[in-house]
Length: 112
Length: 113
Image (tube, rainbow over all chains, first blue to last red; front, top):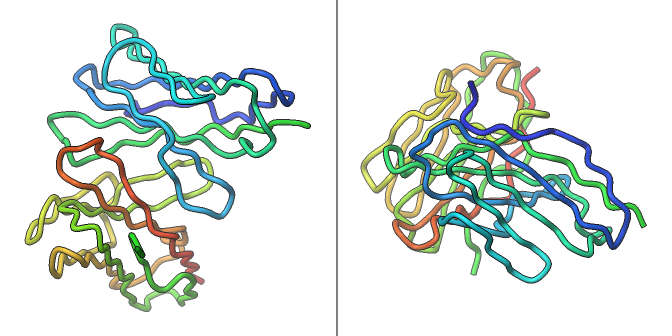
């Protein structure tokens, strides 16, 4: 079983819609959760991190964490064509705090 | 502020050749990492270094060696390249504590023929 699972997509949404990206993880002891955005041919860049159960909002982005269900999601409101990219979920655990496990990524297409 | 710098950006090797990927960071980070990225596979950890003088295996270490030369530099060596090592390699660094954010280099695209 992979540490982190994501639907590879592609997920297509129209411009202005809400895009919902999901991620599940296997280690119940995981404590730190990250969403990275990666444009084609570029390196990943951090867009959100979350440590506590619940929601965390930053502009058009909201990260949601449910540790009981071992589930973390990213909502992108008012999606723009510039949001078209691959979104990578990453998880970090105390027992291996230096190891960040990544999902395979979800490709998002925002259609004008 | 350069951040994380990787060299070379592109390399073509023949099977059995050796090469070293170089990585340097100027953010005074303790931890450094080497990942590989293959289509549909996300990022897989090859090796990491929690601090100067220490290294440890990640998910896919076979066929690779690393050296943490000092706090700034972390190199990845392929002793005898194989076609299965064709990939994009990313070096990253992070600080101990803080948000845990990984800062990535621009990537090195390696092709083994």
